[in-house]
Amino acid sequence: MEPWGEPTELHAGPLAGTIRAMSETEPSTPTERSPGRAAAAGAATLFQRVRGALRPRLQQAWLNFRVWAPFFLNPADRARQIRYWARESQEGTTWVIVLPQQCWSCGSTEALRSREYRRTVRGFEYPLMVIAMTAGAALFLLFLSWLFGSSALFWIALLAVVGGVATIFLKSWEEDVRLLISTCPEHADGLHCPDMVLDQGELFIYAPTHRLAEMAMDELKAARRQAASTLGKPDGGGRTLTMGVGTPESSGRPGGPANAPRYGPHVPDLPPIKLAGEEDEPAGDDGPPSG
Image (cartoon, rainbow, N blue to C red; front, side, top):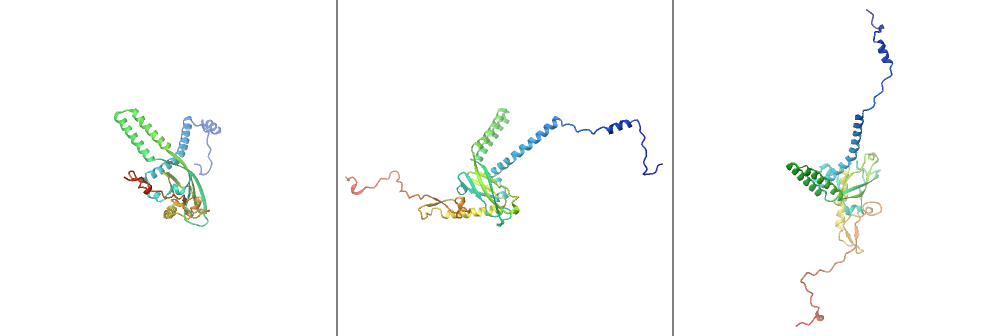
């Protein structure tokens, strides 16, 4: 018996030549992909692209729906919601929104940097009514299709859905939004554009934090109370103060006083309108003689 650790000889057998030939051959190259695998890879890539394109639109649609139907809005998002009116925050067709001068994350007021976002938001006219009518018509047609076994009614129901979606977009428009938000250097990288929804002349902005939304609402309420207290009081120039917070330059921005109200032309008092059946009183001596 041979001791451990010493090399032993391997005697070549009848397969020695075959084994030697296989070891001397070059390594095999990977085979090309089959057509089926290539098609599957292309379909997966296309699906990822479509998903990436549809995801932000579906998120925006869900935000709009929760504004149209506030019942579906959760308390956390409701606390971050800020509502702006067109007459106090709009210049022509552009909304100009300036959030409170503090960091969006920590609330600091030192070493702030201002960041501007510009977005185009789409508004819809009576969208909830159109959705309800479209859904009701489609469900009714689907019920008739199931009841009578008619495939034509099924396709008509699908056409009703397509028509409802087309009606919603035909009765829509786009408006530009310019938003200014402040941040400290520490939280600048985590800042992103807040979500926005436009509905019936009102702009809804979801602040990044509850604290920032609360501060913005306090500023809006103070400005609206001041505007309401000066409503209808004429100034020295014979002009009457009208409702509104003012232009962006007069709303706490450089170049104008804070929360200055808008001015409109003074409307003189009109004489009373005579009702039907009332006659003019006699003109005295100049009137026709009696009797």
